[in-house]
Image (cartoon, rainbow, N blue to C red; front, side, top):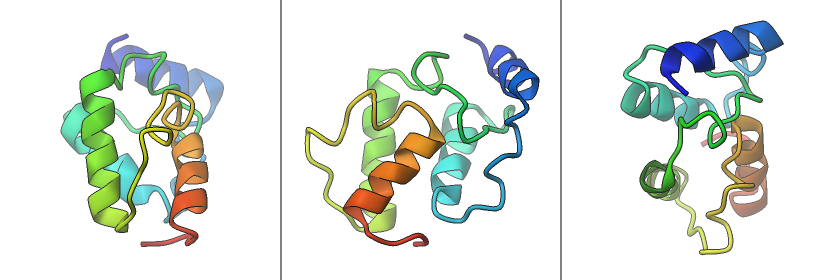
Length: 104
């Protein structure tokens, strides 16, 4: 799926701004939008990151590395999976479980 398709999907679902006020995953959102989507798409909390092709295996590992560094957490191989990285909401759940904080 192209960045335009992801944006259109998010807009149609009405989720383009649904997590903009949240701070817990904002650095993750910024990283994905800047590094993986070249700033062309704004992600909603439920935008499917893996299903839409935003994340592939290499970018998922890169994002996991960013999360570990930014949030000072150690993700296990069990943590780095399609379910935990399916959307920003899912990543927020992972952060809550591993970091135990709502803001970095």
